[in-house]
Length: 172
Image 1 (spheres, rainbow, N blue to C red):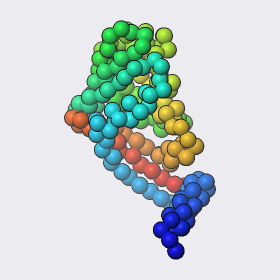
Image 2: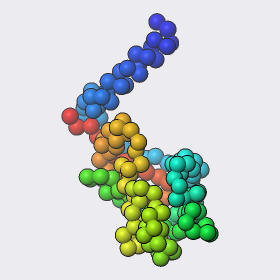
Image 3: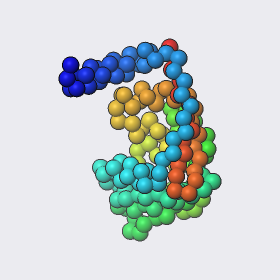
Image 4: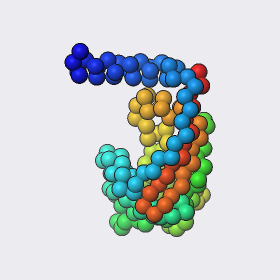
């Protein structure tokens, strides 16, 4: 059997597993710690903002103790904005995963950005708290199916690194 035939067969199996909502993996339990570098996060932000007409660029600088600096340039404001945020450790998982951060500076500019709808879809400001709807950033049904397996998630930071502790379970 050729490598292409084997790959095709393996891909078909994976597609079936996803189509069956992972029922073939009933009982799966994974506890993982996923370190994500600041550089990778900035790459992801750059790719995500390519079609955004409100935000020209965004770059993060990750510090310790869940503190992150975000430099943002919007089309509606003439100067770059530096936001300092503190990320809540616990992520709300149900019914729709949300990451919460607290604005530590430029709260008025954040409120203006929210008022003028300069924030990306899925990002909302409530007082000094920014709520990021994780599901709104997932483009495919397959990504949403993977997210449904996540039972808990926590976020912590080190200098230059975001660490996501996640529990994944499949209960048939």
